[in-house]
Length: 163
Image 1 (tube, one colour):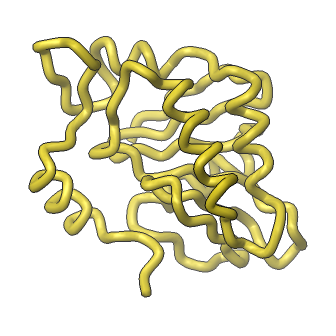
Image 2 (tube, one colour; image 1 turned 180 degrees about the vertical axis):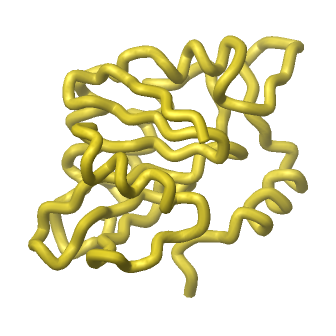
Image 3 (cartoon, one colour; image 1 turned 45 degrees about the vertical axis):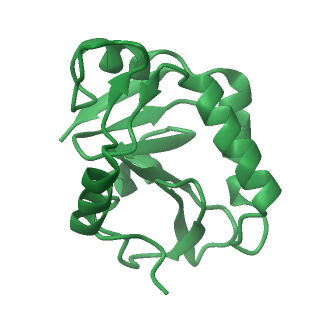
C-alpha cells in the first residue's frame, strides 16, 4: 500500500473531481498558489494553535490517531477558510526528533498519513524540494505545494520559496 499518490494520479483524480485552487464565493478561479488573492491568504501569519498542533506531529510511533488527524484537518480548515488548494498542496514536512536515524516526517496532502523518514530515505514525489528547508531553514514546518514551499516559522510568520 503506497502512502502517497503519484503527482500524475493525484492530478487525474482531482481533474475528475473538479478540485482546484479557488477562493470561496468568487467567480474568478485561480490555479496556483503564487499569485492573486490565494497567494495573499497563504502568506498570512499562521495562528499559534495551528503552529502548535502541527508541532505535535513528531510524537508516537509514526501513526496518526484518527481523532488527532481530524483535529489537524479542522485546524487547517479554520486557518484557511477561504482557500481550496488540494490540487497544489502536496503535504507538510518537519524536522524529526524521534532519534538521530530519522531526519524528517511528513503529513500527506489528504492530512491522513504521517510517516517518519530515515536519513537520506527517498521522499514521495514533489516533497523532496522541502526537505532541506525543513532540516536547515529554521522553520517549525514546511508546507509543500506544486509551485513553491511555504516555510512556517515557530512564531507563525511565513516565507514563500518559489520553485
